[in-house]
Length: 130
Image (cartoon, rainbow, N blue to C red):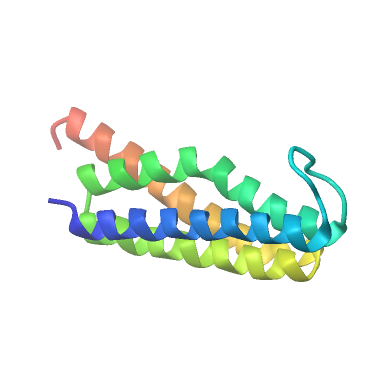
C-alpha cells in the first residue's frame, strides 16, 4: 500500500483545486468574463498559477507514483511535499509580482526532476535485476 504517496497526491489535488477557485474569484473581482484569459494583470497572474500547476501535473503525478512503486512510498511522498511547498511559494510570489515566482518554480522543478530521476533509476535498477 502507498499511503504516504496517496496523501501527497490528495494534497497536490487539493492545491490545484484551490488555484482553480482562486481563478473563479479573480474573474469576479476583476470582471474577466469566461472564456477570456486576459484582462487585469492581477487576474492574469492568478490564472497563470493555476495553468502552470496544471501544466506540471502530468510530469509530477506519474513521477511521484513511479518513484513510490520502484523506490519508496515515504521518500516519494516527502519529495512530493517539497513539490507542493514549491507550488505554494510560486503562487505567493507570482500573486505579488511576476518576477517573484522564480524561487518557488525552482523548488518545484527540482522536486519534480528528483522524482522523475528516481523513477528512471528504480525502473532501470529493477530491469537489470540489481
